[in-house]
Amino acid sequence: DGGITQSPKYLFRKEGQNVTLSCEQNLNHDAMYWYRQDPGQGLRLIYYSQIVNDFQKGDIAEGYSVSREKKESFPLTVTSAQKNPTAFYLCAVGAASDYNEQFFGPGTRLTVL
Amino acid sequence: GQNIDQPTEMTATEGAIVQINCTYQTSGFNGLFWYQQHAGEAPTFLSYNVLDGLEEKGRFSSFLSRSKGYSYLLLKELQMKDSASYLCAVMDSNYQLIWGAGTKLIIKP
Image (cartoon, rainbow over the protein chains, first blue to last red):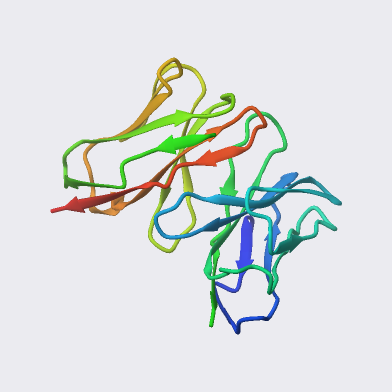
């Protein structure tokens, strides 16, 4: 079954706890992205990676960390330093080329209590 | 700075036609994308324009004018399932997507 998987769909955490969101893909795409979506706002880029063992900060990287140890996986950690972590988190993949249509996973809705 | 503007919300009638506009100011331009997003779900790709003109794909068409920094998405023969948010995104000079806030389209019977 091909595609992008994010789990879980819904995640609840207590304030002050770190939490890691998973993103796995078997589409063999080089580039992977993490976005955050808040009501009434566009998607905002947190981190992206165009190749294994390399990643770049997006517009709102503070309070987040990532790793890219293998092509298929790009986990995102939401740390306690992120002031407003409650949001809908979307992982996307795309070709690391000049035509960059992005394909999205189903998303994880994180609620910090 | 980089900016993409879309109307926040639009309402249309089932069976009618609706045009959703998008204007942009970005650092460079390497194409414009339209995505559809149903509530609580991931965005799905609708169209891509990199040259001026109209791209037609079934009931959906997308238009681009690079000189005006303007695009629109045209939806014909509206169906209830078309109720969703429509996101405009521009690829900038660094090949990163800059996203608009989306237009929520409400279809009434």
